[in-house]
Amino acid sequence: MIPIRDENPTERFPVVTVALLAVNIIIYAAQFLLGPESRLVVFSLGAVPYEITHGVSVYRPLYVPTSLTLITSMFIHGGFLHLAGNMLYLWIFGNNVEDRMGRWRFMAFYLVCGLAAVFAHIIISPDSRMPMVGASGAISGILGAYLILFPRAKVLTVIPIFFMVRVVHLPAVFLIGFWILLQVINGIVSLKAQGGVAWFAHIGGFIAGLALVKLFARRKSKYWLES
Image (tube, rainbow, N blue to C red; front, side):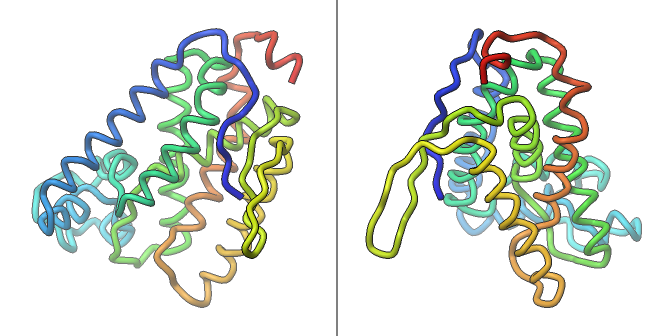
C-alpha cells in the first residue's frame, strides 16, 4: 500500500517538515554528485553498531565523532527509492504532527524518535559493522504519533492487486497498523536471515512515537478533536 495524501488539513505551514525534506534532498543530491565517492559519506556519517558498542572506528574515511553519527545517520540515504519513500511519508504525516506539536517540540520529537530507532537497531545487532542510514526511524516515530492523534483521518492510498491498481481512502489506523505489522514480521524474519533493512529501527522509532506523543503534543487543535 502506497499513501498519496491524507485528508487532514493543518492550521499552520509546516516549516520544520519542509526544512527536513529540503535538508534530506540536498544531502542526497550532494551524495549523488559524488558518484562512487558517496560511499565515503555513508561510512563516515552512518551509525555503525560495532563502533558504538565497542568504542572503536571500523571504517571512517572522513573523521566524524562516533557519537555524532547517531544524528548524522538520520540524514543520509542509500539510494533514490530509499529517499523517496521516506520523504513521501514525512510529507504526508509529518505536517499534521508538527501542526499538533508546534515547530520546536516537533523537531525535538523527530530527533528523539530517530535516536530511539538507532539504539533499537544497536540492541538487536550490537556487532554489526554495516552503517545504518536513513530517516526511517524518525519517520516511524511520526507514524506512531499520527496513529494516536489522528486514527480516523482518511488517507488516499494506492493498493496494487496483482495486475490491477486500486485507489481508496483508508483510515490512518488501518494503514499505519498494516505498516507496523509488516515491520514486525520482517523484523522477526531478519533475526535469522540478516537483510539490508534495519527493521527494528522502524519498530523502535514507532514505539518511541507512541510513548512520547502525549508529552510533546500539548497544543490543542480543532482538527485533532474532529479526526
